Length: 466
Image (tube, rainbow, N blue to C red):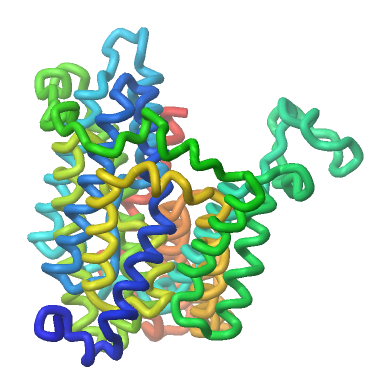
């Protein structure tokens, strides 16, 4: 263990790493149910997607730990799976309908693009090109993004529109127009998911304040026990036919590609969208997690490890498509394990093994209520928020881009949007400041200019399509 993961050099031990890996798995386990639910709407079989999800997460997370010694887990990404489903479903009935097989082929191709970008070290250049202020802002923004995910998944936060206004008592907000929506507090009294999340928040927070090692994990387990006692979680799930004990790998959609369909459908824009969003999402997740884990304290060594992690991530994109699921990517929930002390690849290996075991123990994993994992995500947001102290908001050239990065992630519910606004605004403001002062005080890497152009082109293209 010591030779493979260098535990002492990273200030950790086997027990801490395993606890951290279990915590990461607990916060990610929801993907085992949510991903099949989303992709089954495209025509893919629910159980085949479940198998693909567990296998992709298990294999590539373990690979991240063994080959990179990095405490980051991978699984089919939220947002990208929704985009996948939207592209397939919205094309039905059209002149050139996109089948699930065509969609998986597009994901596979985007993974090949990532492998090329990683081998040529274009992706690794981001670590040098992006200024430290934006890197810290990415960490903070992801923390807020995780918090929003937790609040939304638990029901503590709801989004009210004109169509849902009848579900909320009148007088609690102004009348909405047809195009308006507001963020609102959920039902704290009658919604069981909200109650469980609040109990989890209190329990996990107390354990964290008392500095109990494994506080987040024990908080999740304790909240699950409370949910069972209150009758909100039933043992009936152990016999649910949708979560069989013994996996049937014959139902796996392995390499179900349609190359001719891609050529005739013309999925260039879809492939580019997958590539662009994954590029920034992965960069943000890896840098944010690496910073939190202390890996970036040695910049040169940190960049090497993140570069290797990017290669595993690139292979995972295509590998996940081979197994039959949408884009497999680094998960922001990895921060939960890092917050528990995870510093090496043993954390990732532990998480990967848990995902592989979930193929046989899916009914037990299904017992964990969503409110328990949501509470953990909210608390992790607090921990990642600590990086805000390293951002110099007095210097507006870096402060404004950092602010855009932090706010756009949660408010637009998209990590890539935050990074895009941060990069574009930094290039503009740093250039203007350098021209005004007569000296180049702020460094603008040439790659930042290329990214700025690509960002403008991307949003201009999206606008033309909308």
